[in-house]
Each structure stands twice: as structure tokens, then as C-alpha cells.
Image (cartoon, rainbow, N blue to C red; front, side, top):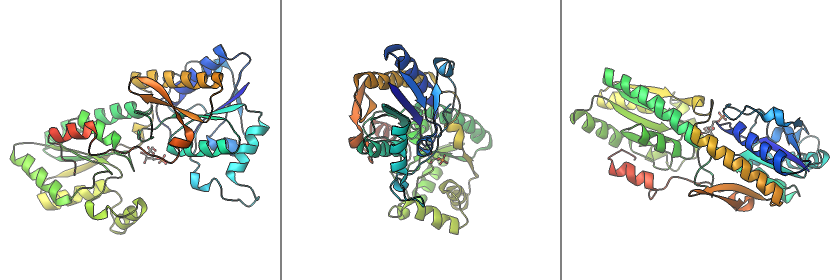
Length: 355
Ligand code: F6P
């Protein structure tokens, strides 16, 4: 049996840990199985590239950040557009899947990866998804791997920023990844004791935020720590698409919501405000122990599904157990933060400003 494996989309901690666990389980339990790595995510499949993985290739990578296979973003929207050679990317992937003689493909990735996986299934390829992303926004699973590591990183950065905020009596705005979903800002913000958490799902008013800061200061707070998801926006922008919002801000010479807010806060409250953009430190580096365990369970579960011949599915976490969702059901659906979420209610109880 020839089993393909790829990692697609933005990277996160734990990709290698999944490759390792799936590989070990495949080599141990599926007689004569070959593991075929597809480099650069779906990009490698489009170009027909592959590399045979031996057991020793996947040794010692449990704690390694990044992905030994490389990754790329292949937008779903472009999958069925005919190129100059008359073929679509999807057609090329399906043709190369057959050319490589694959019996199935394990696609490790986020929401876009799952949408492309569902397309490939319709083309006759057998695919199993494994949900990754620091954004934790994949529908049908309580948690994605990479998320918890990113929470740890963002939280420890905020802990450090808080000490400087206290020394200098400042308002500190920390920009956290999450364009559409605010899970990372919400969880790391609560863990770091942030005073305000701004996320895309809960648009806010700038003047209310300023009043909140002034009240905190009047109550004796030296510093105010604000966790800002990169996709957070003010109520007045709520009807706009993400690109329209960034465009409008760029025209004002303000690249991000975080920069805009720092300026607005300084002008309207008189308090010194500073920004820190955490960026890719949230995606890189070694997975935390929780993610190593999760990746190992998910990788092993994907291998079990291969052995059982169950395709067109993606592995998921429900409560303390692993579950399986149909790719068709997951494709194109996102999991967003809602007002009723238990962490949102907890933040509200604690008096954290949410917008
Ligand atoms: O999808 C994960 C994510 O980390 C988002 O939170 C972020 O906006 C995006 O990737 C950035 O990705 P890149 O710059 O690698 O395209």
C-alpha cells in the first residue's frame, strides 16, 4: 500500500509530531506499506513531486518545529481555474495522485486544506484529514493541534510585556494572530490576565475602550494590557470585508488595528500606549507537551483509519476522545467564538473588556 502524506497551509508546532506518529503506526501495522512524502503541501502534488520516507527519516522529529515536508498555501478559490496549459490545479493533483500510485493521502492542514481534500475526494482520490492551526477555527473539532503551543507562547510574551507595562505605567497592546477567529487572543489573553481582549467576532467601540482604560487607571491600575487579535475591528467597520478594512486603514497611514488603537488611546486618554506584534513566534518552535500528545494521538488515529480503509474523513477531538468527521461536512465551515462560549462568559465574569 502506498500512503501519501503532506502538510499544507500556514505551519504550526506539531506538524512533524503528526508525521512521526502516523509514520510509526503505518510502518508497524500495515504490512509492506510505503510512506510517500509530498513536499510543499498541495504544491508538490500539483507538480507531481514526492519523496519516499523511511522509518529513520521520521525519527527524532517529535519536538521539532516546522515541517520536514515543507508547506505552501494553495487557495481553494484557485483550484478549479484553468491555467495556460488548459488544466486546473485540481486536475493536476488528481492526475499526479494516480501517477504516483497512491492508495490514499493523509492531508495535514487547516480549513483550506480540508476544503481541497474534499475536492480531491470528488475526483476519486482517497483522503484523510488531520486538523492543524494555531487559529483553532476548524469546525467539528474541539481543538486543533498547534493551538495550545501558540497559547503558551502568546501568554508568556504577554507576561513579559506586562512587567514593562507596570514599570513604565503604560497601556500595552499585544497583537496576536487570528484574522477571522479570536480563539488564540481569547485563551492567551485570559491566561495572561489581560484587561481587554479584542477579537474579530466581537467588534468594539474605541471610545468605550478608552473609558474602560480611564476607569482602570482611576481604580489605581499602573498598567493596562490589551490582547488584540489581528482581525479585531471597531463596530463601525463590522459590515466591511477584511480586505476593505485593511485598505481603509492603509489609506489613513495605519497598517494594523493595533497601531490605530495605540494612537487613538494616546490621543484620547493621554496615557502612553505601546504595541508589540507577536507574529510568527506563535507558529514556530517546538510543540508544548499537550500538543505532542495530541499530535501523537491524531497521527496514530489517521494511520488506523488508513488500515481500516476509512477515507473521506478527518480526525477530530470531542471532549477527551478522538472522533471522526466527514470531509464533506467539515469543508468550508469554520468554528468561531460566540457570546455563549464558556471562556467568553468567564472573561465577562472577570470584568475583562471584550467589546
Ligand atoms: O492561519 C494561521 C495564521 O497564523 C493566521 O492567524 C494568520 O493571519 C496567518 O496564518 C498568517 O499567515 P501567512 O503570513 O503565513 O500567510
